[in-house]
Image 1: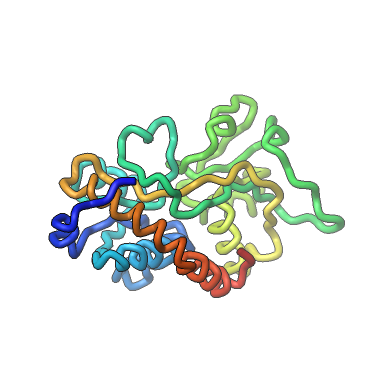
Image 2: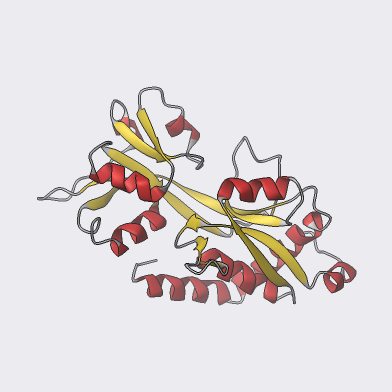
Length: 246
């Protein structure tokens, strides 16, 4: 395992990380634009705090988040999954910060619950996805699926309600929270299957002068946070506040 030197830590009391602005409940902009809110900014701040490092956030759209890291304007951003396309563009801590499911949503139907829908059952169907988001490659490149893109998860669910698509594929927890909190969606849309469960990471900058040291610091702090029991307590409290099972 890599550890940053004490000299580096002494000089790194504050770092700036880019936080995506529209992926609740993981990370989104506060209504007053004063910063980010959600699970990831709180969790990352708590983990770095154990090493005496203060985290400042720059809240931006996810595409901008990635660009700022690539150009070294910030040391890292979140929430990012590792793909063939991006695995060599950034520095990655070995341990995922958390796991997020990618699920299939459909309009609710009366009667007995449906069996879980499999990926192959989407072939020949109209399926909505969110532009710019990462999906399992075998799903996104399937030529038999009729894809329709929306600019946001919110618009994607509206398309499903309007029957412009038969299915919508988006991250499980953000989808469930949006549906639960919107009276126009609650009771009308259900999670009917899961495509995958993927790790989420902070992607650290190769060009930022502190990128290499901070990815090592974060990995060490994350492992300690988990072994101390603080990680499980944080997650249990978070899901309890949402009113959803972990």
